[in-house]
Amino acid sequence: MSALFKGKLLDQNHRRTKGDFVRVRKMDLEKLTTEVMQLREFLPRVLKGLSVKKEQLGQECLHLQSRLDSVQSECQKEREEKLLLRDQLWQNGLELQQQADFCSSMGSAACSLLWSCSSREETVTSWVADGKLQSFLLVAAQTLESFGKSLDDEMKTQTQTEDPDSNENQFLLGLVGTITNVAAVTCGRDFLSSSGHILLDALIGLLELVKPGVSSRLKVLCLMALYNVSISVKGLKYISKNKGLVPLILTLLDDGHWEVCHHCLRLLQSVLLDEDVVLLLGPFLLNPDLRARVSRHTSSPQPSLRATARQTLEDLQALHQDH
Image 1 (cartoon, rainbow, N blue to C red):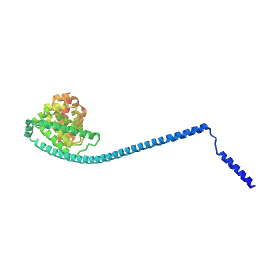
Image 2: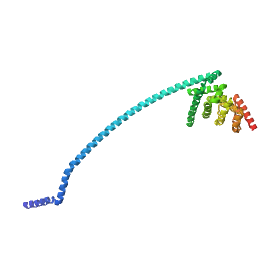
Image 3: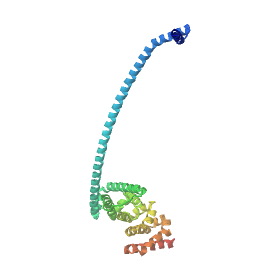
Image 4: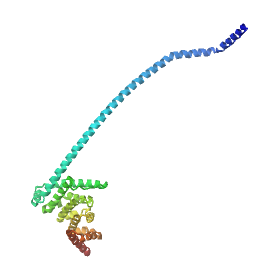
């Protein structure tokens, strides 16, 4: 029984072992052998190539890391330089502002002295005789044009303000006040009428840009200068040819400050005294709107404005009747 059982077990093992073998054709075996030999031959080459590639990639990585470190170092250096330049720029801006304030203060003081000195007729006569007035007029015209451009920019942003006590304002007052005094002297107004055209245009241009109710004292001085020049026939004719004069008079008559309106009326009176200018500005002078604006000031509580307005209105009505 035992022997029979062992025989069956051996037979089963034999069959199991026999089933683990697979028949392969000789051709396939040779092909497989060839492939294995080729792998043995080429695999070291592939591995060597991969190793070389890995080494190259490692070198490139080190090179890129080196470049990155260099760029980061340069970036840090530039950042530090930028901070240094920003600090220097702030410092220079502060120094420039201090210099500008100093120059503005000095300009204000100098123009105040000029304004005071020009109140003497012999001083103006000496300036004209010495031939030094022309350079002053050119500087004055450039200054007024520059100030006018700044007002134009402020008007575009609706931020026009006035600081009566600022050095800039005092500088302009002294400058225009000096021009007014020069025009008050016969030789001075004659010089302005013939050689100060740029300055006269700058005065009218400045008056066009200043808002109603702002810088009234400056506007009064500008109008006084123009009025003094208008005493000269040559000066009046030049001023009258300026296209901005007509709308300027209409605007200033509604300024709201009585002195501005008063000196605007005085300038209008000069216009009405010259027949050639009356012919040139006839349509404007006959405009009912002009008479209406002048008429509003005939009841002003200010005696000088009221009297000037009544005289001007009479001249306008007489002109209207003549036509």
